[in-house]
Length: 111
Image 1 (cartoon, rainbow, N blue to C red):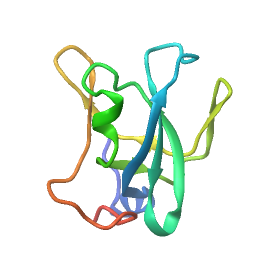
Image 2: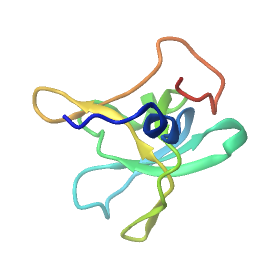
Image 3: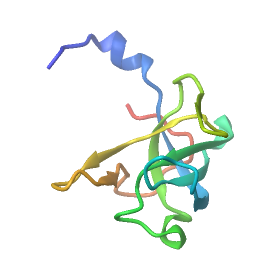
Image 4: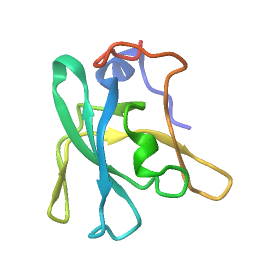
């Protein structure tokens, strides 16, 4: 494990957002969904996530997730990803979303 400074950590913008739309992403190389997430004052941002093993589209709507919002945009096929969805791999390597215990305002920064 590489150690980082507090200053390095402060550069990472980990923010909370609410999923407002989730759709299939059939063009993706691995099964994934397209997500539109409301990050409050930061606006609505798009991303894709390989979370099809543990989540259905309807159950994602309204769920708060943690995203890294200060990475450069990334082109994924014809889709432009604007933030990184965070999560952890389970024992099978399938992604479980990072989330908060209680609802907090969209755009709140992890501190």
